[in-house]
Amino acid sequence: MLAADLVWPLRDAASGAFTLEDAAAAPETAVVTAVDRPVLLGYAPETPNGRAMLVLGGGGYTALMAGREGVQVARWLNALGYHAFVLIHRFPHAGTGPSAPLDDALAAMRMIRESGFAAEGLGAVGLSSGGHLASCLIADYPAEWGSVEPQRPDVLVVGYAPISTNAKGRTIIADKPPLPPVEKQALYDALQPDAQLLPDPPPAFIVYAGNDPVVPVENARRLHRALSAAGGSAELHVFADAPHGFALDTPGLPVSVWPLLCETWLRQVGFL
Image 1 (cartoon, rainbow, N blue to C red):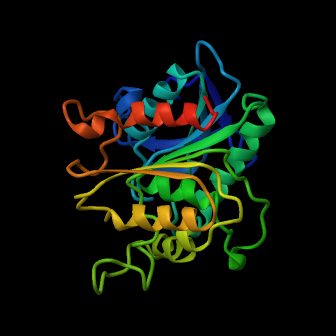
Image 2 (cartoon, one colour):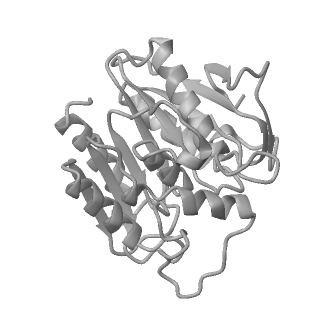
């Protein structure tokens, strides 16, 4: 699956099962349009550093940019020595409920920790909606959804993610209508990481575009303020002019240096 070195079905399924927009597309450009059974795809480095990263791509919880924001990110992390695991998670809809993406991410974190590939630590990297999902790993699980054991990453990397501006009462755009399907809006309403942080948040690297037309940069500021108020160490980079979804493929633009900045930060916080 998507040229992965390891394929681990989640939630006791016999195998993973998902639909690609184009089955002939290269793994680095794959787009997932539906997920029947979630699966964790592992990518191995040539020289392991003893640490691992869970990679969570975006797609607005209705698709998954498994290539640009998953496989490509995993390969970058492999070059730094990390085992990288791309999560193909379920989407929130009538058949799964609003908690499905977070339940899959929590299961993935447990599986990676039990695998032995993260003996020296496990981080999470999330872009766009995947950044919201990654941030939810350091926030309280909604009580109305039940009780689960937290799976706090040791470091957190978040890019252009809708942290809480999609939540009812916290939008930037006045009278913004609810996002379909209703389970997706329920997910954003119930999970507002900047307002629900668990104690002792991990070091975080946050990168956004100041003129993002899709995800307001206020999301970055909210998360940064919350982490700082909780006593966490948070590094925030806002590039004045960059497209939404800049990922790793914006050559010639200032934002293209963010992976190098992140690598330097990972060394500074002792995770590389």
